[in-house]
Image (cartoon, rainbow, N blue to C red; front, top):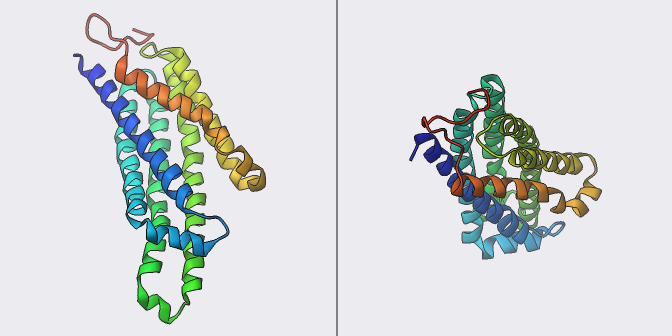
Length: 236
């Protein structure tokens, strides 16, 4: 099998892992254990399901790791289309991943606060529970910042897909719409949080469709290869 097509299929599997791990960490762990406005219930959920909470943390680390390799592979694949634009996407992707990585400290904070008895000499258990919920809310805001940065990554890659000949154009359109979904979601939480809570998760549906479509296409179809073994870009 051509090395470029192998690389594309590897990226598809990395993408699928990212989608599954990210969905588990966000939908089942953070959203499942957090009771907004109730620090006592949230702290109880975290401690009673601590292993799942820690697994969600590791799942997010896996998202960052796989996402970093995925961003690099996309840069390699689309560099012949436009090196500068592909590099711009690479930068946006890695900056967003860096923000997501640093932001994970906020997710780890509740475990540190709730498990260290020395903090109870200064803070009451109720205060520590409230601080834990605060850090989870802070994590949510940091997560939206990383998605805001990813929102610019998607239309850039979408443009590269659309102008190349190695993947169908409709994937480029879906990818651009995915970025729009992330952008609306993040700006909604920053500017109109009371409205955003009614839009979530529906506003992220285009992102889900675009990313799943890209992942499955790369896994089962790969990229277009010429008889010479080279990628079939438009300008060739």
